[in-house]
Amino acid sequence: MAELPDWIADHIQLYLTDPEKAHYWDSALGGSSGMVATLLLTTAGRKSGEPRMLPLIYKRVGDAFVVIASKGGAPSHPAWYLNLLDSPDADVRVGAQRYRVRARTAEGEERDGLWQQLAEIYPPYDDYQISAGPRQIPVVVLDIVESHR
Image (tube, rainbow, N blue to C red; front, side):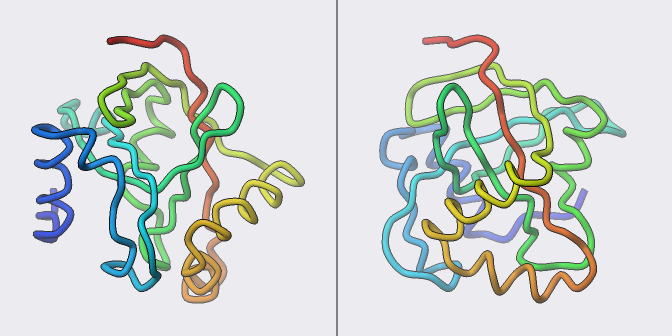
């Protein structure tokens, strides 16, 4: 597994030690401005089966969390998205709250509407789609299966 950049590893560590503080992230680090809400997604590695964590910008929509599999506009999907395709059940932390979720990829009008909502929160997503070339960046809906304290 590729080593994570320090700023991502630091965000994960903060989420594990002070989840309320980690819930909001300064998006200037990613090319935007302002504080944005983040969750900590834990997937099972598709090859190793080991837990893999990553903080992601999200929006709560009904009984689900929506995230974007942008990988900063890279031409390939991020590993966490490939992990979810292989095994859609995952865990998320939103601040101190924990959830078991099941992932699905939004399609068609649902995807377009959710994309717009997330791009309003984090405008660089539109630039990422241009950078990604022919790859359509997935919009992932994390439907809540169970809530934990």
